[in-house]
Length: 183
Image (cartoon, rainbow, N blue to C red; front, side, top):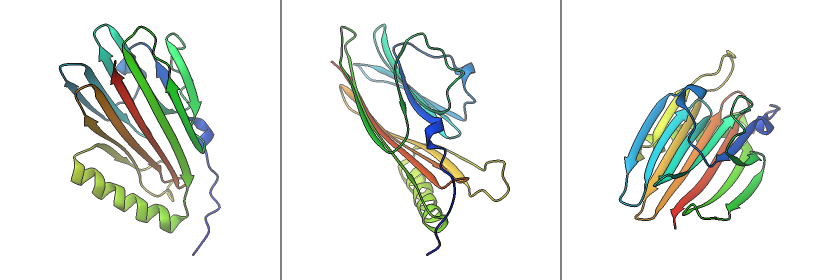
């Protein structure tokens, strides 16, 4: 088995949580899905290497972004920012806004062969589940293909999200699992 000596840029990816909606012009959107349940409203956006999810209950909302860098995003309404490096957990202590939130982040850098096997498996997964997905190739000619996937499950009072962001230039696999809950 060959060992890849790719440098990891996981420190450039961040999960950012907002207590306000963000404007779509802040992102280069590649896909969008919306939905409504009796208890809440949701909107999902997919971008190259990231995603944005808005969960709204009445006038209160939380927005989760997973994005490379994110320096261009506003600080107004930012509740928490986590670098996507290694394994992390975050649990937002609900105030009076009737929304609970918890997330986990996991990153891993894979060898070339393992990355391509994982990539093919995730492409199949996205097609089988009907997940919101965007496949792309980065500018470097030797880069493996990349994909961002957002898979969701809706429940009466909860919204579960699993995201997978595979970045071919460095063999990065970034996975998040989040739960929004209407309290």
